[in-house]
Length: 419
Ligand code: LLP
Image (tube, rainbow, N blue to C red):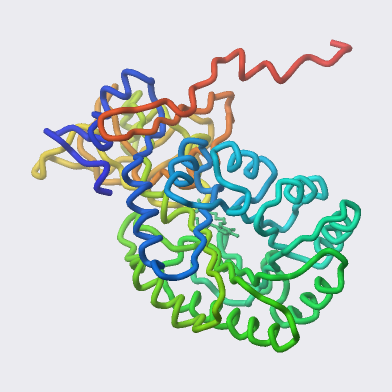
């Protein structure tokens, strides 16, 4: 995480000191690094230099307009899963011809909207969805090129809640029935299947399951071509893991080598949907200590961020490194602490028995690796306001999402007419 480093003993985001930011925007807040996003995107793109590769940033990881915009300006497309995300991608300047739309439950309205925008691919995930899309295409007299997402029944070896490639998961059409479903698609007036898509899970640190899935896709492309389909692209999804703790994720080059080996010389465009690997370590969550409370058997550090701001530890038992904003000397005493938020449930715990230096009220700490699946998964549980997001570039910063005031939080609601 080279964009978040100590300078003169103070944590910086690029050349912006975190304590100054905390004073300017208040805590808690998310802080993203333009340089981090840029470096990770460029590294990914470089690994596929010379290939016809379309890198569609998976907007669900961090859909702030300024984050999408940063990547779009580098040439990234977008992978979206809802009309809302599609609107965001377009608003951030992603050209429609670089947008792919995945998801098992696209509504007819969403499909119609996506078709009207002329996006690159809708990746269909079921026969009923295919029929719905066919009906919409016919009623609007449009010619549509689509992708079909297959489920290769591969164990991605990741957390069960984010594995998507097993037959028991809700995603994609069973690869064993893919030939039949591509034929069905081809028979629909106005619809041409052009892409085979796959995505087996997220936070994948082992290339082996991906290799199995991608090889199966390559075999399928050969069979589809033998059946007369003009397949021009494969969408290999996202999923590349990042380092949160002591993981050892594959390098971009190892990933690219595996992709090229597994998919061979299909002469296809390669589509990728990376999310976490671009955004995850490009962001932190900064929070302030409210109290240190010594319980009967534990030391609790109560901070002003909570599970509604960053739900990953509560939902997936995820580990996020904790960085004291004031650097601790290597020989300073450390003691186990539970880092908890103010929300009224025990699940509102960021870390248990983490070895940390003394932390006093008003001290700042940062949760690392919070750039992906952080702000996007936030809620206003306990009527807490969504927290600001700040984008840093060199020594400049911009508040790219402001903290709403309480009136804004309440204004969508009203008492019932009879009250
Ligand atoms: N493409 C598809 C079809 C996906 O479902 C996903 C993620 C991606 C791409 C991007 O995957 P990535 O490169 O970010 O691994 N909230 C969870 C992660 C959920 C991932 C869902 N799908 C977490 O916080 O770990």
